[in-house]
Length: 219
Image 1 (cartoon, rainbow, N blue to C red):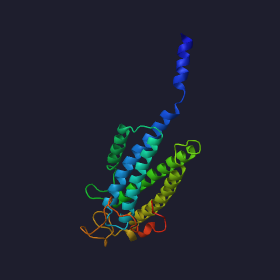
Image 2: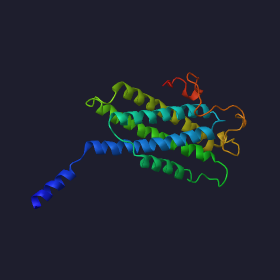
Image 3: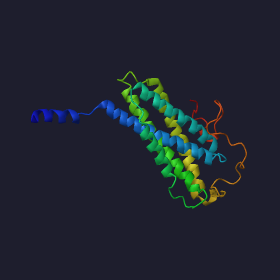
């Protein structure tokens, strides 16, 4: 009897690679869903600033990356845990309550905090693509070419977010760049009601903002 119990404990203690893969990918999918909500909100909030166009483009790309992850999960026979996705969205919503130095109106610090959060998210996604790219050497279910493309795009996204974060920090913390309106946006930008570009309606082939020029935004 004791021998059978000991054998059962050993079997239960043996790692199940497929189960662990499912936990790993669903955690990333939950984070991706929260990230999509965050960057769409940031793109809307900054649509009348120089950061608006590149953020709108990033929002579309990051949503596409989430779809790519779902496709990879299907190829790997990993079911989507919708409860985890819901928790990721809740976490993003709770994150909006972080103090920004103002009680009612939007603060320039909000732009900095949102961009920093997006950079962290893209760094995590880069690690995900790298891990799957390594597994693709032995797992034929994983498309090597597609993972190389996703990995390269994540690096370019990180570069753009690095530039946008630096610009937002200068506007927020440097008195010489602190000429902002009540929403924390630079004075002299496009007025409310002017065409600022839709976050999800950007046409393919449209030239991105100068901050991302030369970084290869093409999907």
